Length: 189
Length: 341
Figure 1 (cartoon, rainbow over the protein chains, first blue to last red):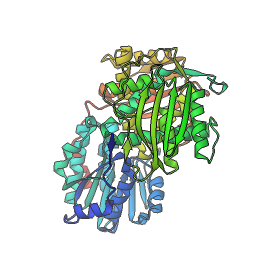
Figure 2 (cartoon, chains in turn red, orange):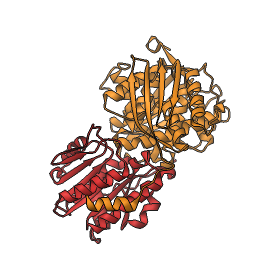
Figure 3 (cartoon, each protein chain N blue to C red):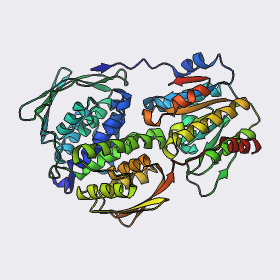
Figure 4 (spheres, each protein chain N blue to C red):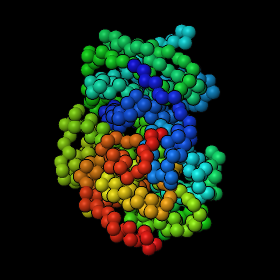
């Protein structure tokens, strides 16, 4: 029995083809777990090429680890502001390039922290949320869907491009079908 | 088992995790196999760092060292490897994977979760080579003869697995008397957490899927009951895993906000220690994964998990609980707060 994987497409050109016709797209990126890193970097390359600044909400890896990885991959890290909901800190801390919220952040606090980050950057910007899958570990899928709905609504209202990441998981904890109608595009990476 | 594995654990404890891992990635189809190969990388990493195997730059030698490690730990009584112009014939005698392979095949799951195999495939891949299983033959005495083609690794996303193998004569059963060395158990457990670690915190979702597979395995093979009352379910799991040597004693207390578990002579402790040293918060202990899954199925999400070591093998765990079944997200209120922040 043999299954041939589809040839690895250039993530950046695939994203360009799919997203370029859209103005400030709201994108749900469904990521093959085997290609997680490559897909995240592809998305960042795409968005950093479109807007001078970006907000990266990380719930998976501490901002320090991510910043180093992105830098190695040639992504302009200096243009990013990280909202970190994974690093364990006793109290929330704010620095010029990141904000640590603590690791047990609830959905409401995450929304508020994100809106603060949006307000602090006056230039044209995009936002990446990494990831909805992590939120599903600690939250009910209906609550995550509501959260994502509000999130996308705000991004649209504030005129920002945005990508919500979701790693392809089993159907039980899948929110993709619930969220797809609120997004301009669902891309599989 | 050799002097290296002075302590052992029933095969069934390892197999429930391997079963869970195959089932956890089954939704990806054959791509799931690639995730299992990452577990192979983690197995090798653990064995090297724990000093269970010695490093070698020679691929053939490394394959031999890893094979011997699994033989010494009782996972096979012998493995012969014969090479012939790009093809390799592997003969597994007393291969402990057979029962699990039969169970998975009966459930139409073709994924190969054998830790010896995924570790060896990881070695081939690290050397730029791919393996394609051509056939598996089961002899009357249970010996498995596997033909494998070795090719350059062109597309790491391609997967070739054997078609359905006739395992009708294999008797699949798990008794506490059939055991494997603790080093092999530790290496697999570490391999799971480490292998999925590149995904960050969300890897726990995959590990929790393993928990669901473990529960299925225990229900199917040992008729363990999982009552709706979380306390009774945890009690059943704690009794089962203590009776089968994961720890000498597992006790717990549950409240509305947390579960506290104490493990005496916990065989997973060396793995946990290494994961914590790596700053990893991922957990692959079968008992803990099964408990997390049961709690989730009963409407509780596990938040932070705090471990406290009394000494090397005696420790306690506090799992913070959050009731997700009643969770509310007030969009209007949060929307107002976002606008005013």
